[in-house]
Length: 461
Image (tube, rainbow, N blue to C red; front, side, top):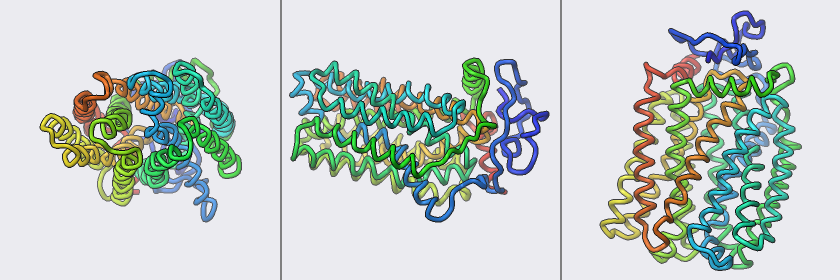
C-alpha cells in the first residue's frame, strides 16, 4: 500500500507535507479501494519537525508528559516485580501463575493498542487518551482487593488494555509532529524520561514492600494513573485536527493494517524491535525468581541490580540521540542488536558454566542496555514517511507486536519452575538471535529500506 498522499489530493502539495517527506520508491504499489488516499500532515520544517511543536516551558511539560505516558508499561510491570514471590505465596499459587499476571497485563497492553491506535486516528488523540487513563486508574485500584490470582489476572488485563492508550497515542503524537531523524532523536529523548521508570519502579516497589503488603503497589499505580490523567488534561493539546482524521471507518482501518503488513520494511523493523523487546521482557519476568531465589539477592538488592540495567537503557538512548543524523538509523539499530546478541549468547554460557552473578549480571546488562539503541531507531524507521492520519494504526501494530511477542515469551522463563535459570537464559538467547536474523532478512537497506531512506533524506535536509 502506498503510504504517501495521492498526487491529486490538494493536501499533498506544499512544503513540509507528508508527501514531501515520503520516500521515492521505484515500484510503489497502487492505491486500492480499501486503502484510500490520505491527506498530508501539518507543515514541517526541513528537519522533519512540525511547526506545531511546543517551545520553551511548554516543550518541557510536553516531553515530560509524553515520556511518562510511554512509561506506563514499565511502571505497571516493574514496580511489583520484587513482590512476585510474595504474591505467589499469598495467593497460594506457583511461580508460573504469578508470572501470568505479568502476561495478562502485557496482553492487555498489546490488544489495547490495537484498539486505541485506530480510534485516535478517527477521533483525535485526546479523547481516547483521557478515557484510557481514567479506566487505568480505576482498574489499578480494584487490583488492591483482588481475592484470587484469577481475579488479579482479569484486572491486570483491563489495566493493561486501558494503559495501552497512553503508549500508542504517545507514539502517534510524536509521529504527528516529527519524522525521520527528528523522530529518532525525540524517541531517544523520551528514553531519558521513561527510562527513569524501570530504574525507579522496582526500587520503589522494593521499598513499598517494607511498609505494606503487595496490594499496596497497585494503590500507588492508581495514584500514578490519576497523575497521568491530570498531566494529559493540562499538558497535551490535540495534534490531529478533524480535517486530518481517518473517516473511512473499520474498512479503512483494515485496509491500512493490510497495507502496513504488506510493507517489508515496516514489518522488518517492527519485528526486530518486538523480538528484542521480548528478550528484555523475558528478563523482566524471570529475573525476580532467578536473581532472588537462585542467586540469593534480597528484594532491595534485586531492585538495585535492576535499576543499574535500566540506567544502561538510558545511557544508550542518550548516545543514540546524539549520534542520530551523523550515523544512519540503520547502523544505530544494528549496533543495538549486536549488543543484545552478545548479552543473549553470553547469558546461557554463564548459567551453564556456573559463573554465578559475575557472569549473569553483565550479560543481563547488555540485553537491557541495547534496547536504548533498538527501540527508538526501530520505531523511527518503521514510522518514517507515514501519513499523519494513519500514525495511530502504525503505532498500534508496533505496540501489538512488541507486547504480544513479549507476553508469549515471558512464561517460558518459569516453565521449569523457580529452581533453574536455564529456561530464561535460552529464551533470551533465541529471541536475540531471531531479532538479528529478521533485521538482516527483512529490513536490509537497498531491498526494503524505504523508511531508512526517508530518515537519511530528512537528516540531509
